[in-house]
Image (cartoon, rainbow, N blue to C red; front, top):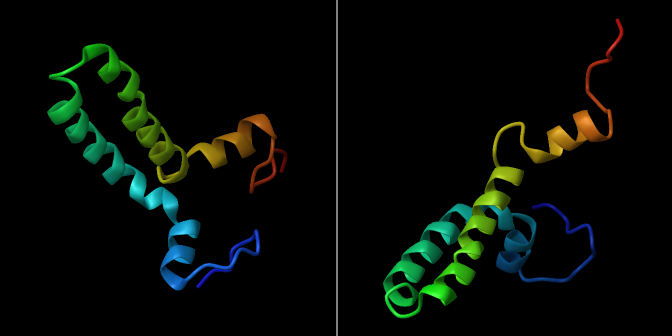
Length: 89
C-alpha cells in the first residue's frame, strides 16, 4: 500500500480512498446527475442549474487524472517544457 505523502494517519480503507480518490469521480458524476434529475430538476430549475456544475466538475477531475496521457502529462510537456525524451537528439 502506498504511503500518504502528507503523513496523515488513516485506517486502511480511508488511506486507500485518500490516495485513489480520483477513481470514484466517474461514478459520482453519474450518481449526481441521476439525483439531480430525479429530485432537483422537477422542483427548482435555477437550483438545478447551480448544482449541475458538480457532476461537470467530477467529469473534469476524471479527465484530468484518469484519462490516458491526461492533464499532468500535458502540463509537464507544454507548460513546464519537460518531457521524457530529449527534444534534440
